[in-house]
Length: 156
Image 1 (cartoon, rainbow, N blue to C red):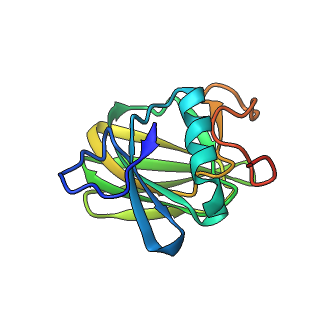
Image 2: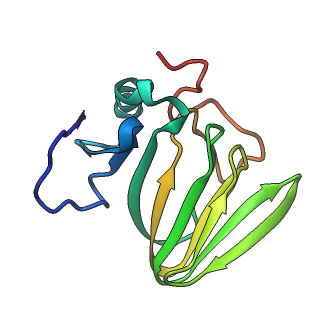
């Protein structure tokens, strides 16, 4: 995994996310995967951006999301590109659902647990504050050990 300084070719945001950092910099993240070691390497590489860093990525899918997530360092923008998507937030123990169609968006506030379900084949664009992101399995009602990136206090 490495950040690319000057990419001039077309990128596929499905496989190569872009990191938005301090100084209005946009850098493709080559070799990105959801592997814990790669996530930790990504976090270490962009740690200087702190809570201001963002990851931009497209996700394609069909069906229920397999995990809940929370982004304590900042809000997340979710844009439906195609199909139909339901974003469910856990707000004080109550399900808050937002249905999105193509071109529609919602903001998941910082620290709010949420899950994305795709109603048939769908694509979303997510702009996420990754620092401190937590994940928990969809079937579990409690947050589990952190799978994603370190919290602001844990970042190098």
